[in-house]
Amino acid sequence: MYDPLVDKDIGQGAAYPSSYWATQTQTGASTGAIVADQSSDIVVIGAGYTGLSCAYQLASRFNREVTVLEAHQTGWGCSGRNAGFVLRGTGRLGLAQLTQRFGLETTQRFHQEYGAAVAQVRQMIADGNIACDVQPEGYLKVAHKASLGADLPAQAAFLQRSFGYQTTYLSSEQLNSDYMHNTQAYGAIRFPDCFGVNPLALAKGYSTMAQRSGVQVYTASPVLHWQRSGNDFVVHTPQARVRCKQLILATNGYTAKDLYPPLNRGCLPVLSSIIVTEPLTPAQLQQSGLHHTQLIMDTRALKYYYRKLPDNRILFGGRSAVYGRDAKKAVYPQRLLSALKSCFPMLADVRCDYHWSGWVAVSYDDLPRLCQAEDNVFYAAGYCGSGLSFSTLAGVRLAEMAMGIALPSLPIYQSRLQPFPLPAFRRLGQLAYYQWGRVKDRFL
Ligand SMILES: Cc1cc2nc3c(=O)[nH]c(=O)nc-3n(C[C@H](O)[C@H](O)[C@H](O)COP(=O)(O)OP(=O)(O)OC[C@H]3O[C@@H](n4cnc5c(N)ncnc54)[C@H](O)[C@@H]3O)c2cc1C
Image 1 (cartoon, rainbow, N blue to C red):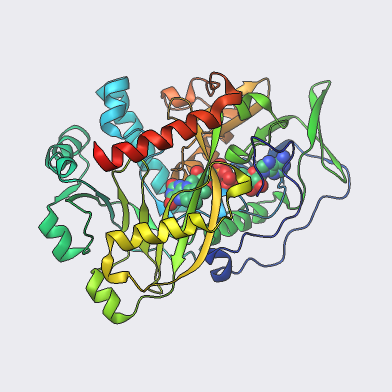
Image 2 (cartoon, rainbow, N blue to C red):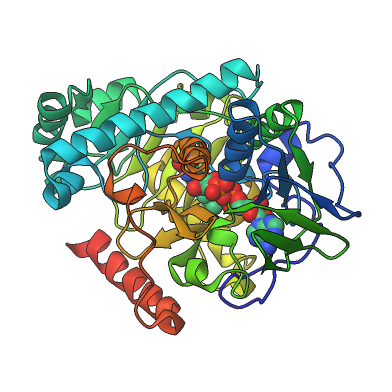
């Protein structure tokens, strides 16, 4: 599998991974590669949510000529292979941790912005009439240990008091009677405004909206490099060049080593993996208690996230290999399946039908950044595996920034991604974190 810390470039025109989503989504004909030189006001690199949302805003709201260049397919990166959790947040810091780092007032602005991100996804789905299997609202953050469960009532009260966030505390008994018979669950907080979607259908929907607004979207068109030419940029793909005034990098965790080193050095691409089981039988649904499609994530350092899909399969995700070359090894889906079965022993016989992985971009300080990296070059990246809703809003904010509009006053909009110290050793740091996480989740 392509590895952004190893490979110099991302390749060209690969098919979608064999994910559950690819079998459930009308991907339609690919838009095709760019084959003739042209000019455009703005080039956006990468056709995930960030790039497509940004291109749509630039064309529909600011009337700009926009060209999107995507190395493979629309939503080929994280956007077409994620778990479809539309969450109110990004990065790895919750509201309590943000409050510790930035104080309550700034964190209230974060919370507002994260709410605007969820609303923006809803708005796009409505405006584009996107059929992406929107599920009823509800996300459960589940304590995987009794000691963590004991903190949940205070956490829920803090969210209600400080942010007016109408979360609900669920005791172990309520969780068991109303939501699931997970043997490793010790209560939960339920967030009322998050929901599940088919992520690839959402990305395709964004692409259609952008194209209808006049954006040229080219697939199988990797950007190899660019150079400045007077006040313009000349962007090179294998078969054609595009001249433009502004450049937007929406390549996130898939940014190759040589494409834009400051962005590559500011992210640690981490593999997240998903399995999807065969459909549960009525008896298995009843025994597991998983009769709903609420989103679920636990409190482990090495988190598991899962949801029942509309066709009664279980999607279950978590960490995977460290290196791209190991991503397809059988041990990783086996580990996820056995983790699922140890939470739900009544599913001991269930089979795994799909397995795939993708690169999430982890930032050094656990928060994303959206910035003007240099004159007329912009990027948004580092969502740390929680970027579905935020990437959609990041597209809006990137477009506004490129058009000279002031953004809400938040730390993530005021600086660049911090480079990892000793970037060549990022993977060693990750291995050490995984060892620590295993010990913490088991013993601490
Ligand atoms: C397994 C998994 C599960 C996840 N689950 C969730 C979830 O449930 N909820 C959530 O909030 N987040 C989730 N995420 C994270 C979320 O999917 C991402 O944060 C989000 O999709 C990022 O969107 P993006 O547009 O910034 O980047 P991407 O969707 O990764 O798009 C980047 C694009 O840039 C293209 N590209 C790179 N280099 C070049 C180049 N040189 N030329 C042209 N194109 C290039 C790539 O091909 C790619 O299509 C998950 C991620 C993974 C991998």
